[in-house]
Length: 557
Ligand code: AMP
Image 1 (tube, rainbow, N blue to C red):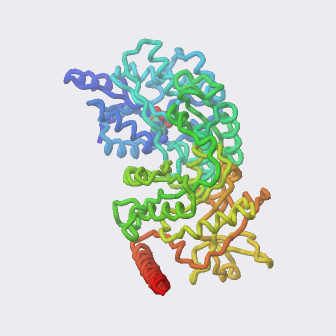
Image 2: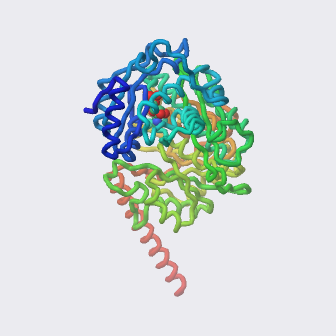
């Protein structure tokens, strides 16, 4: 267990001992109730310093009179257990009197920065932060102090104070740690109900959207801020305190985005105030754009991890007929005459990159997997100004034929559809979205299994997951999609609904051979698909031989 110290003089004694042995000292200030975000700071400290001191102090001075000081979560025993596992040597857990003895009168503030953004809405908050940080720095005189980028303004304020005072300490910022669904880890998330927790992820989503807008060419900070706020409001947050595009070191709001910026948001979900932020680097601003691309682009979703494939190989790299699945799909798109191809690759994309490079396709990354809609949205930076059609294919359906893609595309163009997608009848439709048609056989809607009554469940026609969209309404719908499901995943089927309600023409095209759309998710699927592929090849070969034979005979005559 790390040593727990409650008094500053005892702490100083420990520090002196360590110094005598030539050790470097690191400080991680926290308010306890630790999570993986805090622990990342502790680990960063462990990597750089010999003695790791973590302070756990719920600092009353940084809470406003109506804020959550009384109910702020506290559990020192749990914190100490966690810290032990992460290489902390000393937990400094003073009480309020130790830090602010009776008669305490001093205040510390960083002009300008103390009253902007969160400071404007939480008067006195940053004065409380600078005061406690200064007291901690004076207690330890550490070599390095670690602060999370989660509280980005705090990091900037502390850096400014240290610089102004000439305090001999290095301030190291540690990247923000998120939950799987994108929510920035925060001690305050324990306040959230499950419904609020789902809405809370919209902070990250709004920032991701902002990043895509900028990567897609939007340079007006005001527009980015407004779209961010709209998305937050549409997602059901209770109140937005601010969304701001700022200079990363001065926190001054920028008007025009032409170099690195930071986007910060603060919003209330119920009675809980949450903050988040994201870095936008010049590289994403400079991303090459397809300004004048017309015609049709295929977006191939290939980010699936394929956990059930029991292999290190990314799913789409498994071979069918001697070729990686994704290459089969790329071939089919090319056979259909689609030359511009964008592949959405996952976080293990380095294993797919050499192949994709060889095949001459463009690649965008989807780092977290949040549904088909989210996957396609990653191509937005390349297609922001694209007025043509977007064909969406799955990298794990290697049996798709070029002819089928071509048929979707030609129908789409001929009927001037907003969306044309493929449906097929399967022997067992359990688990799939069912296609509902009206009496004229026109598409009405897709009903997911969980919402299907017995009548709907009897339908054998399913959404086969191959779509052709008009690009502009597609991205409009994707960029504004709402957080109406718990996982905050978004799907292309939801987009169909949105685009239809906006007056778009939607056509569901039947495909006779349902095996073309078979997806590979596990080892068994792979076997099935390989068998079908082999059979198909055999049939094609014998057909070809037959035709050639007839041909030769004819010629001989
Ligand atoms: P707090 O206990 O909330 O005062 O946070 C203590 C330190 O941990 C601050 O420097 C925070 O920025 C940092 N921190 C909190 N949450 C995260 C997170 N999700 N990722 C990275 N750092 C964090």
